[in-house]
Length: 303
Length: 336
Image 1 (cartoon, each protein chain N blue to C red):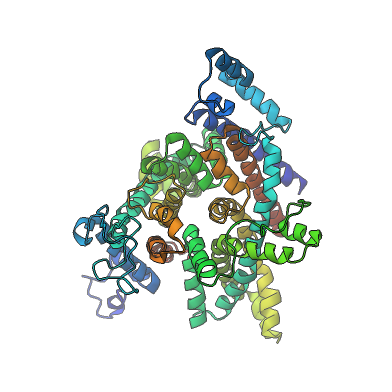
Image 2 (cartoon, rainbow over the protein chains, first blue to last red; image 1 turned 135 degrees about the vertical axis):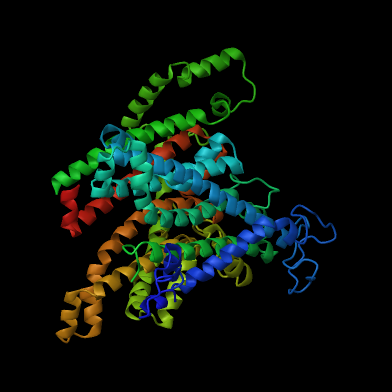
């Protein structure tokens, strides 16, 4: 425990105060699930980054002697294909490892875009109030009146099916949550003394918004971003599953599931593993989100 | 309370206008020439093309088209589906009960299992049971439900062969829909086995759709209960010597349920999203599947009308949740 040296009566000043990071980690590590989630997530990132070296085969390599081969431990399986092959003889394991790239990068880009838009709009709405606030919040209400997946579907239908357009659509449906969150925090913060004194000291609106107020709204924002990350991965996979996200033959997990649907009752492994990959990824991120919430935001802390 | 209601409805009007505008613009942005899709012909002589453009009002300036569209909306006219040649509104109303039935069944499963799970976890806080329940809830919360549906199909339809996987009732039963709710209609029909068939068709889809709400309700109930169990009035009730079941069931749970009720209401938007996936997989003839089909068929009026109607449903339910919350929690009313 990082706090123990603090209670030492000798009190050597050198490491008396743990850094903010160490303090954060000691809170975060209290949650065992969160640590496991982080470990799994790091592993997934590793797999995604080094997919070309880790995966036994190329994701689109076809083996014409092995269509729908079961996983190695099942009857009829072989050690050549650990998790079996799909209907056109591609190695499941290799495709899943490469698929991690899609899901993780979709999540990152969607959240980054959503955050960028949401933070700017939320800051502007909360800081300036008045008509601009009304306009921004009404537009957000309109977006939130549609179920997110439906809105994303229609947008993708307009822009054309594909990964890039799915990402744009998901970011747009996601950002109202950030806008509301940031605006709420700004409204709570803007009257506080430190903001007033910064203004009196001559700070301009941009500086006030981004340097003075924003850092104090970070905790709930980070938690929301984490939860949005897992939502984005789920929704992107759902779009892929409905044929509106990444297009075959890309080894995106949702798209793989869509391709596997006709084999549901014949080859369970083609269906099981891509979904399991989605579940594990989303679960790991949600565990991290729970841990972050406990560590960062005492107000949101679960008892 | 009336003032609260009026304020809430007043906020919804600009939102609804915005929603109709979004739907209107979206449809005009969809790729493909609506004239060809609507006429159902691959090649058209130029005169006929002009005639159709005129007939559908596409030769009018865009703002005028919007005015006409809003006028029709105000009269409840949402256009005519290209696919079925029936009014979009009656199409929607015919399919809506199927989605409502599925959603209600899903919500029933979520509430009946979720609230006790949350209460037990809170009361047995820190026990293996608590950890087990909450881990399960987190898995449920993280579930890609379209995959979950396929897994259930593999197990219950494939291996065990005990559950049907598509439609609302067996093909051997046929009767006129009275209420649109298959469970009720099958009972009224009096046909032997019809009701059982309807129930068995409903089970898998409603488990799938109910999974995420179930997880959310269990988590929310647990944290609300934990908060309430620390309150003075609960301690007083305990000190009075009331049996634990009474303390938990009456004093604690009633108060803990206030935020849970809100959560339940706010799941409606999710249920409609989930219905798109669930209905597609189980060929459930509701509005989720209808929207997906309409989008892929480029049925412009159906997509446009569907967007408006679905948004209207979400807004109405959110309003209802607000009102219920205002009723149970007077503090909210005055903040507005």
